View (cartoon, rainbow, N blue to C red):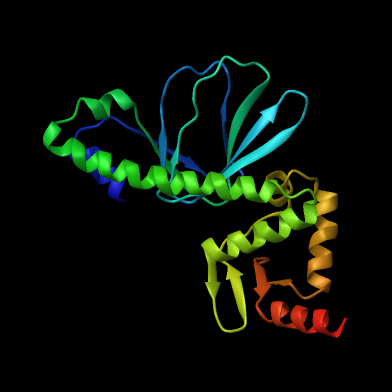
Length: 218
């Protein structure tokens, strides 16, 4: 793990969190320590929870993304980090990076710029998904995103390599399990998706070809 090696070699204090699937970390307004976290391994998503029960997913992050929540005194919302798969996150303090030997600081800075750019793209993608008015469109685009980023592709389908529960799909898309169950049943009936023996989502590549033919016939 590259970042673990950096911190060990440069004597930067750190702490590692392990999150099993569906484990979470809550960032409330009581937390005032600036401690960014880099994802060493796994997939997590960030939900902004408002106290009126409104919830907005702002990003799905993966290995080599950085997670940084600005301390806030706003009592109207808090952030929750939820693991989709077993994840390891390394936490550190900015001040400890500043104090490292200047001969090595440019290496860390260069790598941080890379992962910040990569992470920012994840926020933009999630914003695009959540901009859809209809939940079904959000779910479809979410599945395509998961297939692109975490899928094993062959000639006929894309198998999402991680089990994604209906609970997580509902949380990410801003819906409920009843609605998500109905939408997934519709997508299964239309042959857009199916499930593997271990309940992983499989995207049917031929669906797009079939859909084009049906559209022409109409």
